[in-house]
Image 1 (cartoon, rainbow, N blue to C red):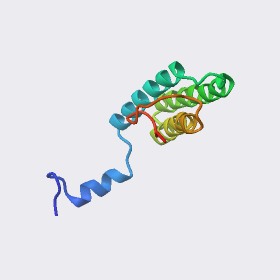
Image 2: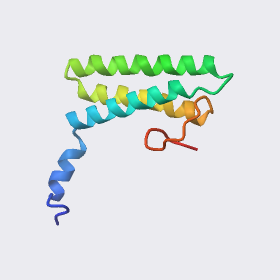
Image 3: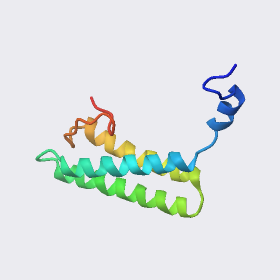
Image 4: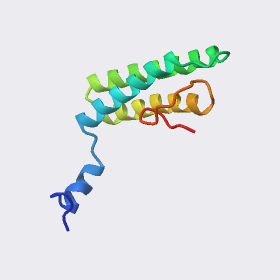
Amino acid sequence: MEKNGESSKNREDKKDKISVEQIEKYFNLTSKALSKAKENIIKGKEQYAKEIIEMVENYLSDAKHFQENKDFVNTFAALNYAHGWLDSGVRLDIFDVKDNSLFTIK
């Protein structure tokens, strides 16, 4: 059975692949989220925010390194860790953001 002109086998084949488009999408998403988080640190939480931002920047740097070496699995993993740090900062009330297209909001 086909869905949107794509066979079941083609969809299955894509489940174990990471595309360049996905990598770029998550680089952009995480970079935008990082910028938004930096602009919206809750007063009194600056030290926690600094630590989270440092971890996010480190994981983004790792992701770029992996991407340059064509290691797309680890690129994707590092991007997900980076974004996970941002989401945890939102959930722990370190960043005051409301954009549910960039963050997991409470």
